[in-house]
Length: 508
Image 1 (cartoon, rainbow, N blue to C red):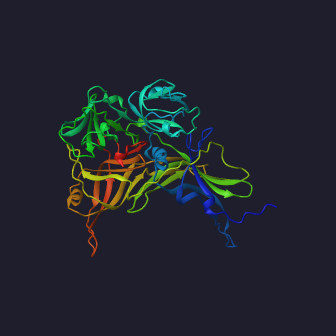
Image 2 (cartoon, one colour):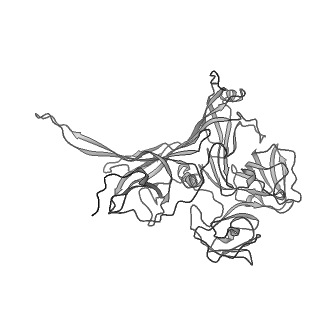
């Protein structure tokens, strides 16, 4: 006897997201990436019905009809690299600018082949030539610990990557094994920190800096953990403002710039990540739509589910409370909502396992929070506050649904102005922030989270501040509420997000 299902617990629900080929249409074999929602907001389809109410002697309504459907999806999840990076492409309407990897976010997945100890070689199915000499590579997912970690590339071909570290024979690595370019190691004495126009610069004698794959507005971390791999003083995160064949010139630096910092006798390392930003070039703007699948438990025949299809990323809120974990709320507007019974089963496709990831918290995982007025010619202006009690960062694509005759739901979506903003409540120490509000000063904000040798970075290159009225309460510290309103910067974008697959311990 099969017992009837009387109820289904919320813990039986699950969420996966697949990128559509075009709005409302999945590819032949979609990949359903798992998510870890903490809670849901509006999720599904809201039906609008209109009753018939003709003038008649019985004074009764007639049965109405379905006239509209509003499909939407909203959920909150903990902040992690896995939770954010893939979907940030959708919220920023752009492809990630990713360095070489066997498992790119966009593109063909390559297979990691055998590891040969005698020649310190990783075999790869294709794409090995992108791992050029002196690049720093993070190896992950291999069964043998020695084959994982940070490696320095010695040489490569289309199907091999030779590194300078001792490897161990591994005939068949797991499918998750991956190689990713995460930085560059300069030859001994090749680079030094110089000052150009009052800004610190990384100057190389032999490396063409334009070949590193960086762009103006991108952030790097300068310095490895070993003494031979970092400068005496100039170690930290920095934003690239200008790139020439010999120099990376920085307009933000996580150290106090000095006249010069020699790299004599040192093999200096720099680290970079996967950059996602809203693009100004129309050729680089790409709208994504998704199919959000929420499973709803077993109906005694199979797993049932509901889908919000044609879902375009609408709003994102990044929440930074004090003494708590970081969370992000994402909302999507869809063209339709469908359901599947257990008999119908799940929509076909590949369903990878959820990777084990750590979430970030606001107590120990922030490497840098800095809001400062922009001072031309200075990479380290005085910050407007030292500590904050809470912060939010928001993205709004101002999505609106397009209705059409003959379509239940939406025919398509229109994107409005890309808006970035947020708020912060900070501890008052001086009147610099209040003056910045009154003077409508050009302000910049960056946030860096790092743990377990990886990290995430948000950068708003240009914003203005609002509010700024000091809150004075008895027996409490004075606080200052600030509203952030971002605008297009000199780099041509409003928001920059970077995921660092690997960072040295010095960055933590």
